[in-house]
Image (tube, rainbow over the protein chains, first blue to last red):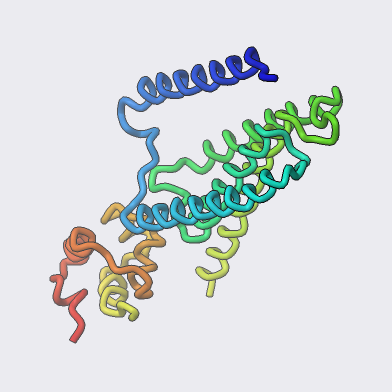
Length: 176
Length: 64
């Protein structure tokens, strides 16, 4: 049985989110300062990063085929499963770019970026924690959509740790 | 192969990697990668670096 109301709700939510992002981008980026700029080496590395992320997503999807054919019950609902695969792709991309010096752009304000990262991570963790308390996180042994909030928060924590490690490596190599 | 000519030309101008990077509009890591021979720059970037260091393309990027 389909939950049409939920499907429409999520689709409308995604569309509204995209429209808001588009409007903000158009209004706030008139001087072109919001768009991150990368130099030629960074653009090449980012291209490779997208390539590896694509392979990672392909491998994950391919691994899922025998599981779904065999009706293996995974501990995630469908939405979480698809988001988990996107999450893996994003992690591959950011990890490759961070350690190859192509994640932070030429005009990136690191202080502003870190603040945004912390705020988004905290909002997502709070939302996930609230779902834990109300019991919405796991139903019948399967993680539900609030798990997506947990993954989003985790993504920013991983990114922050990677940036920190990269900075430490750079500082060490400079001091030699 | 390391680009020691670039490194010495930069040092002769008393510029740090960061300063040269800002002059030519790239990241410090890109200048570092060029000097270490890890990245092969485009002709546009080579020209920008030559202009910033008052050198010719041959002087900085031609291998004998």
